[in-house]
Length: 354
Image (cartoon, one colour):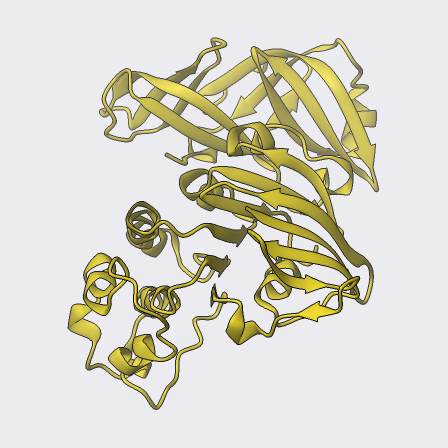
């Protein structure tokens, strides 16, 4: 159990959080600049809170009331920053062995090298590594410190989708092989849904929501977090029909919402997790004709929330679907609660998450 209750003064707000973490992998999720990385640095001991307490199990890492401050090197935390900082003057092997700590029969150089498939890189200079290889080497180095807690700061942010899909299996393998609790900072729904058991949503230094990825990510974000960044509608569905000749796959949620997504080779009946950005959905008061878009979804407006010129309109289409509009569009369309509308969603605005 990781217990955190800290306040950290920042330039425009204070990071002020209290939380208990007991899941295998917890995501700290939210837009950029809201305190996510600061929280990891505080746990690692890189940044000191002004007040509060941090406990790893029964061990106190920081306590303002008891004047306890355990330095970073004694916390046994494996920290992988967003930019995989490797020593340029050392080979890959010497990099991953740097800082190796303790003697754990499960976490050996050989087992980590095998799990992350970096054996062919061991003699290579770090300057000759690709982005994905650098991330795997940085993760190997963190694991070989035999940490009691693993901190990953945007581990996939610098990678394109193809590289992400290649790195994710290694992160999953680490989760399966090594019994190390991990905290992953991310603002990417894909990363969170595929890696994490629990999500904590942070905005402006405060916890806004906590729960399973599905609970947190498929609901509107409280307060300003709902309007900042890019809100993604996430649907847990099943594959209902395959039409490879048309380039589409029809998926259907338990509530009956049907969507045509880009074709993907998934057996009929299998689970399909798909996402649509709120800003990629068009809203019409009447059903338009002559559209190329495959998805014309009828529904009823169940809520409209406006702030700073932006409106988030919730449409009940069996499942709630959130549409991002301008304040002007809401006024011009004279949208109101209970009004029937139609949503226009291009097939290629829908992407596969899992």
